[in-house]
Length: 258
Image (cartoon, rainbow, N blue to C red; front, top):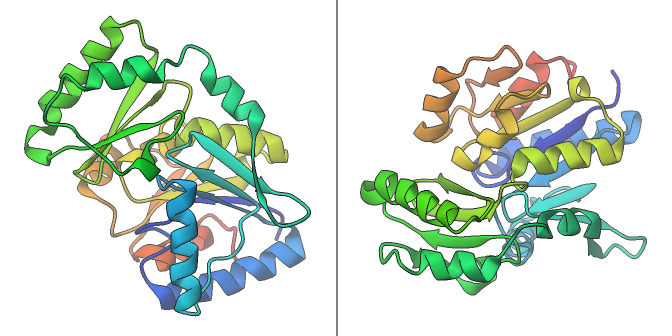
């Protein structure tokens, strides 16, 4: 076995079945010690909500492993730990996203859509503007919103996931682009990288990628539909849910032994 890079979503992917996560964590920590395997969390959560999840898992005495790198807010923020164990933001990534990004104009334009309900302040980030949007109106609203933003010459992308969450990001920012940045930063080749997810905001981890991909069995329909419409031999749809699905996929690709 050799070193590999695991990049995984948290909610409903790694997190959701405590027993399965605990078992996978033991194996991953062993591989990290023996093979210098790298673990990266890529979550839609803000840093605040990630730390809240950490506390919840600690309270249950089934802790998350400390990742080598943390990607928050749908790929718009990248953190690593300093020697004191504190999370430090990656300024190079932030500077890259700041080009051609006008957050104030994004908010002003989106305010014209009354169907959009702002998410809590903790989820409004420097490079992410987030709303709740009901599924029944989503298709038309997302299309109209994208047109309105592009008419303002904004270089953005709109991501709708979990049948309720709408995020407006710089076009340079998503889970896939942040994965590439982190992978290159760590010096790990695509063939030794595997990404895991369960929802629409994880599509960027899998679309036109050379990295391996694992979709857990409990994935949202939006991701399953996309997966079926875009077959790729580098992507594996697990039969098991949550962390058990990740472990199944890692064995499928040969990253974990028996």
